[in-house]
Image (cartoon, rainbow, N blue to C red; front, top):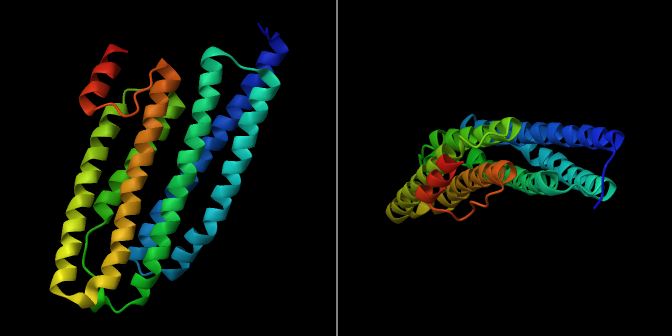
Amino acid sequence: MITMNKHTVTKFDDELDEIQRRILLMAEYVRSQVVDALDGLTGNDMTLIEKVIQGDKLVNKEEMELDERCIQLIARHAPQASDLRLVMTMMQMITDLERVGDEAKKMAKAARPIVEAESAFVPKIELRYVANMAIEMLSSAMDAFARQDVSATVEIARKDKEVDAIFKGILRQLATFMMEDPRLITRSLDVLFIAKAIERIGDHATNIAEYVVFMVKGKDVRHSTLESLEQQIEKS
């Protein structure tokens, strides 16, 4: 068994704190990417849309750097038990945050032709409400990570169900628009891509919340039903 001396433990904690700090900053950046993509769409702001597309490169770079930091942390300090679980969980979170960045980029790329198109051929679909829900879910999940608190997990999972239901409703609306007026088909598909990206952001936020449960309690609650998740959290 490897025993770490006080100096080694302190160094491990310092490196761990730095990684956690950068993960929280990464989360805030991808959150701003989602907000900017939505604002670019609703405000017909092509400059903002292009900013989001270009900003995805920074997200990818940070993912690679943080993954490397985690690998080096494991190699240098050989953490065990809860410490190892924490590092492995953070690596999963980093992946999900990078994918949130990908979804923001998808939103921006789909927003481009919508902003450029004549408004008469763009279906009128309300996306801000569901997008704000997904953004709030991500913020709540990262707050749970920062505080190592599992209490928000059930509410995040519940909101994910609502986001899924709203997405299905948007899908039905778009299908109706396309059937009634074929001229709306192309831009309807762009709106669909944006709605799907928002739905996926909700999924990634839920994943992060579930990782927090594993990190804090050592319980793998992935694929649990909402009822089962609620019972497991209450028993914690």
